[in-house]
Image (tube, rainbow, N blue to C red; front, top):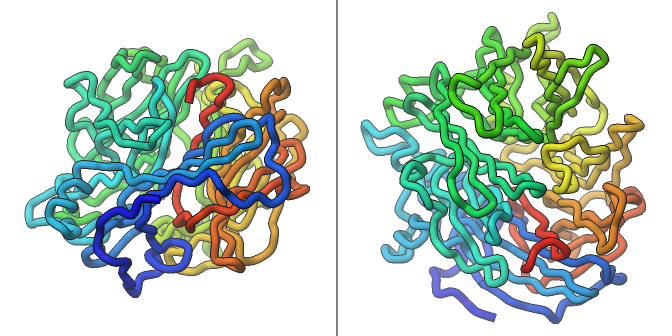
Length: 488
């Protein structure tokens, strides 16, 4: 066990720094863990989740995206389990350590006069984590440099900047890896023209494609999608007010009379290959998956499924924009499962709700099917309790897109789930032949655990629980590194 030298744990009257969100300060390696049930011996790989754990007392109003990124990893091999955690050592964290204090105000703070917010924000690299070219890649919500991390030790190995064209780009947290080709697709966005870029890195880590994607103004895109041959970028009508930006702060507005636009780009396309598809005004954080289909007329369609916010209505049927902005601004938990179909022959978009009964987010799939048609997806079941700054991650749900059915597991109050990726069983054949693995904060015991579910029988509950040596703060996104395909 290694105790990092830092200021003492602090108490601040902020719900994002209390309870399950409170930071931890120790970097631990522990393979002597209590196991409830039996860890399957055909579970082989690494579960890694990112999240905030601010090392120094935050300045001003604190938002969970301000906390220093910390990776928590659990390695499974032949029934054995090891837990490990480390901070992502970003430039901002290094500067804070040298100063002995937190230096910057964060997302809710006011920037220096005349500065665009991105100029003064600390890239905490606390939001997402992917595995590419033998390394973990750690990324941040508002974009910035991508940090490379050793998958065995969790030691930060520097920035992913193999090409000078990447320097200074605000690369988004949400990228996509095609495990069948090894390619890494990403987008970057910011507050100055052209407002977005799109890129592809090869399996060897070399930048293969980078093009500008011109938007009408600064936006707040969150995710992207890939298919076997295309990438899909998002231009939602959630806009940054330019006057507020000039004054060094964010002020978001939803333009209900502005159409959503999606850019469909050949994976290695050029600017002139970009095709824009219009859709109804909505806002979405996370894509489940996308793929290509041939319809009954022989036309190619790009199909994308995700979990956008539900569109609240006034009594007269019009959009309740204030409620939508409040929900988005406070990370509220009202979502729908939704599908878009982009016809590459006619240029038309078809769209509609797939499920508005279950309230789910953080969709995950068998990663071998990323960009290819999948049958199953696994989501966090979201509670509908409305408390500021505290979404309720209440359980898990599994969708079957062939039968149009879903099952859910909810253990009762007092458990906070994490994004839970699919982990293929050694020798597994079926798409869902494996496990779903995720952290759970058990408030009854005030401890964090890893719960392992049989992916074919989610509703039966976990087959095993692993008690961790310290609490894992509530966090964001996770990945599974398959030990059957990767040397980790």
